[in-house]
Amino acid sequence: MKRPIRLPLVFAAGVSLIGCAASPRWDDRVGRKAAQDVAVSMGLVEDRALQAYVNAIGQRLARDIERPKFRYSFHLVDMDVPNAFALPGGYVYVTRGMLALANSEDELAGTIAHEIGHVEERHAASRQRAATLPILGSLPGAVVGSLVDEGLGNLMAMPFERAGARFLAGYSREQERAADRYGQRLAARAGFDPHALSTCLAGIERYERHSGVGSDTPSHLHTHPDTAERVRTTAQFASQLAWAPRPGQGASRSRYMKRIDGLIVGDNPGRGVIDNEHVAHPDLGIALTVPSGWEMATIPRQALLSVAPQRDGLFIAQAPIDEKSSSKVAQALQQALVRRGFQLGQGGSTTINGLSAYRTTAYYDGRARTRLDIACIEHESRVFTLMGMTAEVPGHDRSDAIGRAIDSFRPLTPEQRNGFTVERLRVATANEGESLLELGTRVDNTWGHDQLTALNGLDENVAFRAGQQIKYVRAERYAPKAWRK
Ligand SMILES: [Zn+2]
Image (cartoon, rainbow, N blue to C red):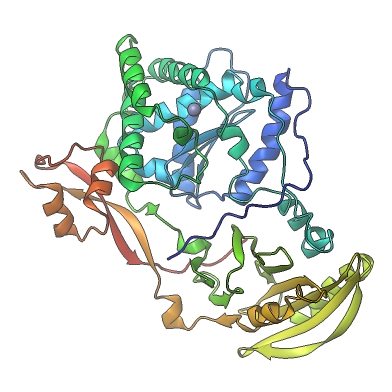
């Protein structure tokens, strides 16, 4: 299975997010905006109990911040790469990959406390780096974004999948060290083991070594090759800190394992399953094929975008709306297009792979004549809108490719819909003297030996004690969920 390519969007215009970075109000303003971007572009894990758990650990730490500058919220991001990051103003995120990699509540707390350190010490503001947002300005008809959907205009001006990246990438070595020390002090004060940040960093270092994790993933943990050095430094610093564990929190491995048992690792089929140009969505029960060779980007729960290599064609599949009539949706869209100066082409009712649909075209005379192909398609009391845009310029007209993409929209059969698999983290209880390899075989583990070693924070080739809780990964049938926006 191939992952969507991250769109290297054209930096046509720079939108500065930097006002006066001198006051914490800057953090509030910039943070709030970026938090919206993160929720949309990365997506949060839809599991209230787990979200509440992460927030509870964070709030437990936040209570012990001396003279806190911000009000904190803590969130679980639907990403498989182990990572944590913070936005100015107190928005702290850990990925589900981080949750899976941690081996105790103490490790999770250590990671969160480190991020609180970045926020309280205002590392993002002190960088004063001008943030720029990419805009799809090079496409024919710069109006493309705003006409698709109220929100999509703004979304298209976003760096997909990496909205928070500008706040992740640029911490200096000194800032990382400062956040480590801050986090360890805070963790100790709140009754979490300050040594856990060190073991957590060691786990990340091991994970990176074993999985060759994507270097295109924004992570301050990756931009600092001196993780091994930080493991040592934080271990030393922890030994100088006095702390006392509190009842009901921290060390218990089995309690933490119970929390994360069942967590999705790897790709989440609920966000769509992408196999080269083929896209299937088990929750929505549909599939389509985007033009071959076009770059793809997904905005979780919002849209799938596909752009031609020469940037002369754009195909968008929007998340559906609750509405039964495709012609009604098409009419509303046509009215919006007319208001924006488009001329309407011929339109009419039709079927696409057995589904009732309304197809039409619209044109815009800009520098070149821009053609818009629109299909509104009915499926299960919802209407999907597909849209293709290209310029009617010889050699650049991508109408045929767009037409084929629209024609490919199809319902999944019940067998197809229930035929997807998902990898979930599971917890097994070891037998006395059992090796990781033996345990893995016994429980049908699907991950490699090295990855499993890293996942459990183990040294190679240990023999387990009876009752030891060991994480492994199992491929399970994905049960499609009721879709909601
Ligand atoms: Zn950091």
